[in-house]
Length: 289
Figure 1 (cartoon, one colour):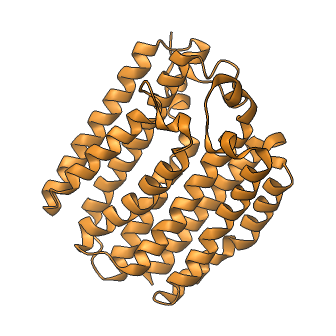
Figure 2 (cartoon, rainbow, N blue to C red; figure 1 turned 90 degrees about the vertical axis):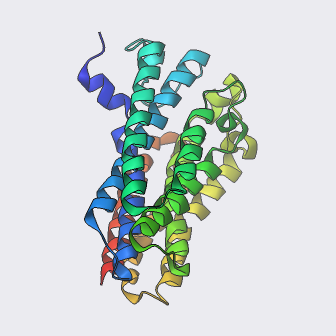
């Protein structure tokens, strides 16, 4: 019998900061132009979290059915370990999508931004087609692109637009910084799983690049948010406080460069999660000043 703790673990709570951070920065951007609104912000957060959870359950279901997760190195998954049936996990993913749709409809109705329904539909389609199709794009090396787009520009700028009714150039740059940390998190997993993914026929970006070049890309991606901070600071000087994560980012980047991602993935994963969350919080605070 699947327990409540199993379902919580299956939702992968350590990844949920990616959605929360994006909504926080988007709300901070709205506050920077004196348009912050609590209700749209909370609804956007509900959409982001529900979609993230749905995506995690979809991946668990699809990878489990394919057998990709049988020999995985990372944390156990519900379907692969038999803790939940594929049908139950698929149902959980659908329920999370329904929750995201409900919050999304409420958000666009409140803010009269009906065209964002199309964006939401694309986001849901992306969550399902990442792994749950006959030719999933996550198995062809496009996962990092999708994560960047949806947990960077789409989430940040969508949140800002529903509150402010406009988007600024510096918010676009800030959204890229948030997206890069989400990409770094996915890269950690894909570099860690490089060998087993290769055997399973899962051609992630890490598999395509190979271990050395994947680690080089990881190092670059981890440092790019600091560059984004400097650019945003030309318009919003207080965001420079988010540059406080530059040193820990550099240390993690160097660890990845020398191969620690392969041997110490859990620690690197936690480090990126903490740094990414801190970056989002500090960026949000800086934008609100």
